Structure formats: C-alpha cells, structure tokens
Image 1 (cartoon, one colour):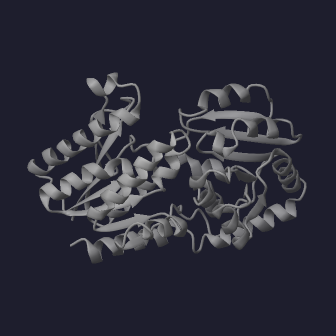
Image 2 (cartoon, helix red, strand yellow):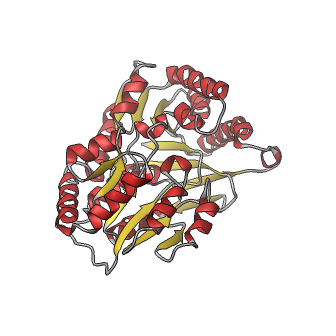
Image 3 (cartoon, one colour):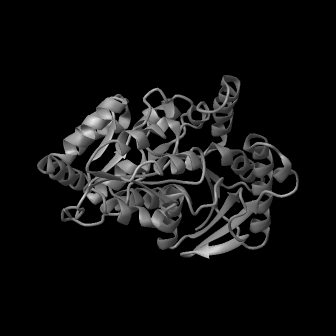
Length: 373
C-alpha cells in the first residue's frame, strides 16, 4: 500500500509521526511525508529510515507574510499541488493521512480529486490549542473548520479517550486511539546512578507548562540538579537565559527525539506540570508521561488533569496542585525518600507492559490492513 502523509512541521521534531510512518514502512507499506519546513532548516527531499520526506519551504509571498495564520492557506495549496505532482509521477498513493487540522484541507482536496481514502490523525483538539494565543473569534473559526472538514474523512485516529469523546461529539466517523507510547527500554528496573538528585524536563517551553517559573522553583532547591531541553520556539530564549542564574539548572538546548529516552533514563524523576485551565493540556497526555513510564521514572504532574488521573491510577508519580509551593514539596519529598522514588519508578515500569509503542503499533497496522483497502 502507498501512503501519503501531510505534516505541518519538519518531521524531525515530531516523534508521533515518525513512529507511525516507521511502523507502516516496516510493515511493508510505502510511505511519503509532505512536510512544512517553515524555517528552511532541511533539504527539499530526503529519506529517513525508508521514509521519503518531501519538504515545502516558505518562499515568495509565504516568506513575506507576517504570521503562520496567514501562511496556512498557501501551505494547504502547496501541499495539495505537491501531492498531485507525486501522484502523477508514479507515487499513486491509496490514502492520504493528515496529521492535525492544519493539514486536513489539503487532504480533503486530494481525496476529492483522486477519489482516495482520507485519514484524519487528530493529535489534539486544535481549537483548544489555538485558544492559548489567538482571539476567541479565531478559535471559533478553527472549531467550525474542523466540523466542516471532518465530514469528508473516512477514518479518524486520535491520541486518548478525552479527545476521542470530543471528536464523537462532532462526527460519527469511526475512530481508533493510537497513544503516543514509547518503545520498552527494559523489563527490569534500572535505578538512577546520579550523585545529585536529578530532575528532567524535555519538551515544550511554554507558560502553560509552568515556564519560566519552574526554573526559579527548582533553582532554589538544594541538592538537586535540573536538566531542561526544548524546541527553539515559545519561551526557548527566556528559559535559556533564566537557567544561567542557577548553578543547579542546566539548559541542554534542543535534543533530537531519538535521544530523549536515554536522557530521561539518566534522571531520577520527570516533571511535567501543565496548567489545568488550559483546555488542551487538561485533557492531554504529554510525551513526558510515556517517556517516564518506559524508563521507570516517577513523574510529578498536575491535579485536575487527565495526566494526573492516569498517574494516580498507575501509582507512578506524585500529583499536585499547579503552584510553586506544591511543586517544591513534591520534589523535596522524592529527593528525600529514595524508597518512595523506587516504588513509583517500578510502578511506572510495570505500566509499560500496557503503555508501550509495540501495542499501539499493532493497532495502527491492523487498522490499515482492515480498513484501508
């Protein structure tokens, strides 16, 4: 089977899309991904582990426009035309697999033109994510756009039960859940080997993740080390500069997704505080959750969120209120109680028997083989 994926980032920073594309490639399918390399960081075309990556760069008017909100319609058009070009030049794909709402319009056009199957892979509720930075009328337009476009899809893939419930409220199309789980590292618990109690955060550096405040909270705790990494966006520069104030906070810059697990394994605990008033984060499960699980590391996360519920259910971390005092107490509690840290870590590792990529990969491949014919 030939699969065309559409993705609005450069691919190298998106572990979910990489893992899905790799799973399908390993299962014998031919996968090409058209991506939007907004900063022109990579060559126009390359192969990564058998996956063909075709990149669209900001050129001409796309480069001159002041915001990605205005570039999006041009990206859709370019992705659509590139898809048609690939199809007519021998890559006659059977399905277009759209990752997130900001690719779906191009996918709908390709479906109508080529009479092929269309998958919508909803990584999140896009309108909720937009609500962080955009005015309400833009958010409403985004939510209405999703309701209109989803009528044209054949199948939906999403990340967890809360997002599935939302999608069920706007469509009756069949939905499967493929979680952002990680590959099992080891079936045996591997205790950390740090001389100083080490905390890890590798992910989005955004105010909804308690940044840059989290730098100050941990920076003022004795006998701990805090390693932080993230993408070059949002609060990257501010967090980088804030880290310089503290000897026990190390800014690691950008870490490729294939190194995240090894870095997580080096830590004693993982922290992932999300603002419960942010609707997108409230119902999401961050990559940190699954990274901590397969590494057998406790996680500190937020009460009143889906990630908090999951952590409580699995007994694999501490769930606290979204404030500096509770975060500080949780860190100190784990720093001073190695037995508790090990118990929670072992519970996390036990959970990896269910929450691992092999389980999710089999669901994805089975779905393709049964429904995309």
